[in-house]
Length: 284
Image (spheres, rainbow, N blue to C red):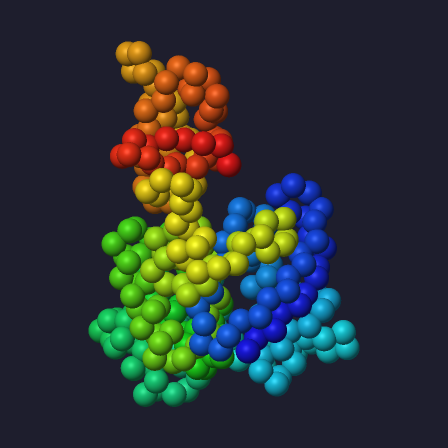
């Protein structure tokens, strides 16, 4: 069991706020951490990694990582951290990046085989694609068999097909190594595919906590589905209007009447739902 009870003042998206997190995580669980930018997600990961200070308590099983008198150094926290920007050593080959963490060549070869990087192990990072670099970053994070794997939007810069491939590899490694994983993500499909539990932050506080179905599949009455999105454009077409809405990685068109077109604004967050196969918008 991981016990997190921490507080830290922050400058969030709406000014000064207090990160105040009280969370218990089961061993081997896969947690998706989501919420608007500036809600404290990355800061929480950095506090868990020991890269930022906070008040409160963090315990992993019987081991204390943080309390009022003590903070365990990052090197002793048995974590793996995957950043958005890969953070690879540019002057080291793929294999050397892994062996820098742990000299276990057998483990390095096993990880490179799982992620289909064996033929690239002598290459420098500058010669790799974004997807290949992120796979190297994933392998390196697993080289110490971490108790806790932290991922900060690790796949956000990749194209959809590569995202799906790496999602499968992340899931394979999570299961094989029995690692507890916390991943920051804004992608509903990624969250649904990977996570056992979804924690939503808003202004430094946990506002929702449940399964991916409970958090992502909002249904009301006879509605068949409901997702949150952002209005990208509202276009007049003859006597109707078309709202162009981004939902995760998808862009959809919703028909509006004259009254609805005046009610909504470009850039506004909305709920996209359907009844009797007719999509509609509502304010969040």
